[in-house]
Length: 80
Image 1: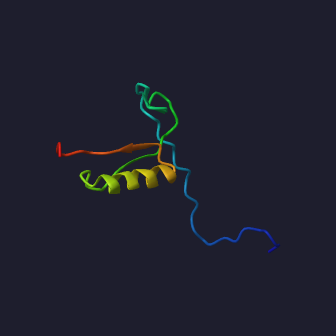
Image 2: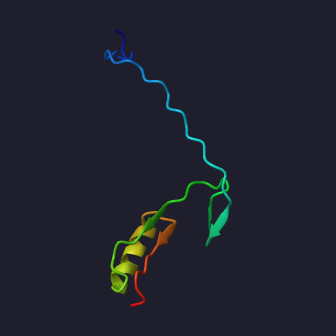
Image 3: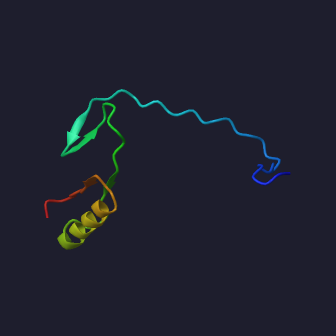
């Protein structure tokens, strides 16, 4: 065996996984982010705070966007 030569672990090689084809969809703009229609995959998330706690919800939105989230969804289950 020479340096840099791969070591066989006796495991069978797995075939390459096929890449799933994206279904055809219509492109829409969510603010400056394109979604669908062949646009690149966007990073999206949703808040988990009670929306009545405005400060916590805004804090979570800020943390999500700082970590690279491009679209943040906020559910408001009641008008309160």
